[in-house]
Image: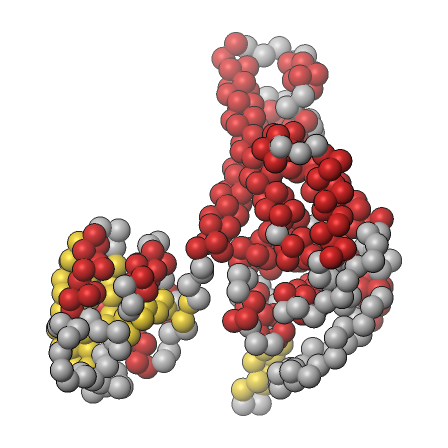
Length: 418
């Protein structure tokens, strides 16, 4: 369909079933799934022809929808680049709509378009390029952390199988610790070769982990908004980076409650018929960032800060540690929303605890990071403190309740200082 037609055709919904090398498209006319008719099908078109296909066969008024998959964001950005409206739908619901008796790319394309018309599939936010790159970094860091844990477990298991118990595996990067391990028993040459191989894997994983830690810490230092997140009790450089990578554009969350729900920190509940049930927060939301906030909340509960005391009081009343931890994490999410929305005040001085966070972050940057920055450590430390003073902060009032039904009014007063 050419773009220069005189008459303006009725807007269509085009379902796109994408693969790494090809895509199948189904153009539907109609406003509801039951009456929508398939106008045209394009089967297994090369993905390299996506933009030329969109210019030739679609109009700016058409809505192109696709299922979230490995290359869905790339496809969506490619369509947006040529002036087409592209929407990515959550894959969890679409997977449940598959035909039990038959399935192919054409059926999938039609199913995706009808799911959009029915309004049953949630729309997935398409990250901007900067946020996507940060997500790629964070994913690489998560993978190498997981790999490090796996190697440590394998090494502990191998040592245990040969009678070496409760040995400090995490210190085996030190030469002295390796000598102590070798002296623990009479190793055969083949056995020690296995240990040496695992140690080589461990060194490589630790080098990668240090590499990503350095890059993420440098990113936090250079970004005033990410750096300001460290003002919130329980948030250090890695969590601050994860917030920037996963949340991205905070304007997509109109209220703190929407951010809390996105992270999966709101308790599940069921109120149907005569029964009523309230549950926990497992299996919902962004588990990657939620787990980091929960780790931060556990640290907060061990402090004498206002938020720590609030959480301890809640624990004494409810007698449930996990409930208090999640409640503190939920308060942290509210603080993140306010801070990222610009509800901030200047910091007049860097306190001892924040100074400790800066020290930890500079340790993550490491010598290679300072060499890349071409600045000495003391100069970087001074610059970071100045950015924190001129940046934004948010002092969370632990006794302030989050609105549950109505969004916060736009005239909400600025947060008060500590």
